[in-house]
Length: 330
Image (cartoon, rainbow, N blue to C red; front, side, top):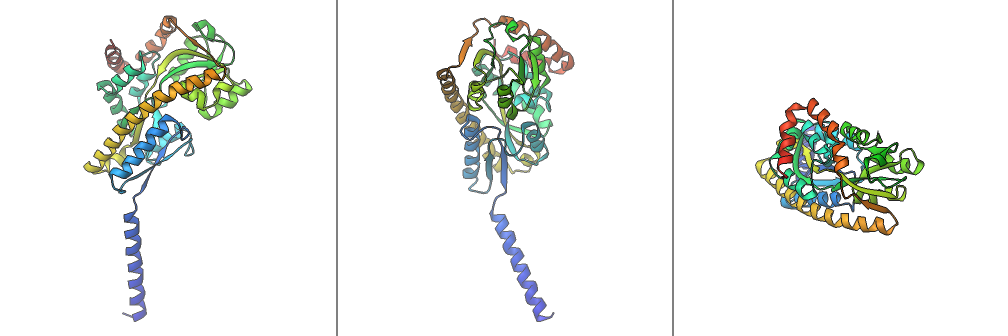
C-alpha cells in the first residue's frame, strides 16, 4: 500500500474512533416538553425527574425540560411524543382523551369528589387501566401529576347557578366533552389554544375560561376576567409520560431508574402544587378578584347527565371504568 494512503487511512480511522468514543461518552439528551413557565409546580416536578434521571444513571441518561411550550403547542407535542419526535412530557389528561378513550373518563365533569380522591383513584387499578390505554396510543405513563380543580372565571358576572352561564362564551381545551359540558350549562364553548386565551379575554372574543388557581394566576387571566366561581367541575390529573418505543428500548436497570425518578418527582410536584394553589388564591384575591364559593353544586351536577349518557353511548366498553372510579370514592 502507498505510504501516504496507508498513513491517511490510519489517520481517518483514528479520527473515526475518536468521534465514536466521544459520542458514546455523551448521553443523548431526552427532550421534555412542558407548556408551563419554569416556576410552575408541573415544571418543578419535571425538573426533579430530569435531575434524578441524570444523577441515578451517573450521566449515562440525560433528560432536559423545555418550558413554556417552546417546542410546540400541546396537540402537536402529544403527537410528537407518540411518534418519537419528542422524548417525554407532562400532558393534561383532557387533551389526551383525543388519543386514548380511557383517558377521557376523567374528563367527565364531577367524576372526582376531591383532589385527594383523584390521587387515590389514579394511583390504583383505575389509573392503571387508563395507563394501559395510553400505552396502546404510544405513550408510556410514568406517574400522575396534580393540576388541582378547575372552575369557571369570566369578565361579566359571578356564576352561582347554571343559568348564570347563559349566553357567555367560554374557552375550553380541545375535547368534545368540554364543549358538551359548557353547552349543557347554557354557555357557548369555544375550543382555543391556551396561548390565545389572554388576548381573547382582553379583546372580548371570549367572556371567560375555566382553569385552576395557579393557571388563572400565572397566565394573567385574572387581569381580564375578574369573577372566579368555584365550581370545581373538573379535577384533572396530568400524565408524566415518555415515548413508548424509547421506554421499550431501555434496559431493566434503566427502566428502574426512570420509575424511581418519576415516583420521587410525583411526590415533589404534588406538594409544590398544594403550596402554589394556596399562594395563587391569595394573590388573585389580594388583586381584587371576586371569588364566590358554591355551597350546593347539585344543579350543575344534574345538568351533566346528558354528557354522561352521550359518553357511555359512544363508549359502552368504558362503563365499567366509570363505575369503578365512582365506586372507589364511596
